[in-house]
Length: 190
Image (cartoon, rainbow, N blue to C red):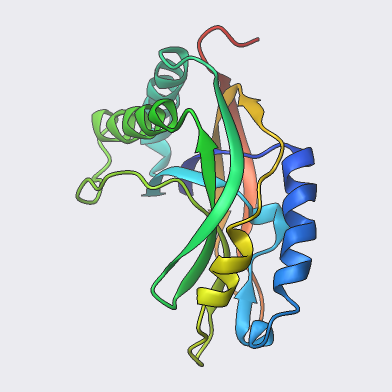
C-alpha cells in the first residue's frame, strides 16, 4: 500500500484556495498545466512509499506517538512558489517550525518501523497545485498572482496517514486517488 503522512487543510481553506485556483486557470498557458484536484490537496510530511502489510501496525503505532509528541499548531495557506517550471505550489504560513518538527517525527517513525526513507532534506511546506505537461510553461506569472494569496488560519489538530492510489487504467488525464487511512490527534488535541 503506497502511503504518506500529511496535514490536510480544512474545508474553509480549501474553498478559499479553490477561488484562487480559478483565477490562476485564467492565465495564459494554464491549459498546458495538469492541475491537481482539490481532493488531493494536502501537505505531505513524509512520503512512505509502498508499505508492506506486516510493517503497517508498527508504523501506525510510531506515527501515533509522533502525533502525540507534537502540539497543535497554527497554519494558513499563503503565497506560492515553483520547482523550476515543473510544479506550481501554494505555501504555508504560521508555526512552520512545529510543522517541520512533525515532518521530521513522521519520517523518523517510518525509519524506526523499518522503512527505507530517501536521504533527508529540509522540509519545505508546499501544497502542489499544478504540474507541467510536455510543454514547458513559465510559472513565474502564477507565482506572482499567488504572492497576494492567504487563507484564513486554522489550528492543525491531527496527523493523517493517506493511501495514494496511482492511475492504472492508462486513460489520459486519470489522476491519483487519495484515501485517508487514519488520523491521530496532536498532543493536547481532542
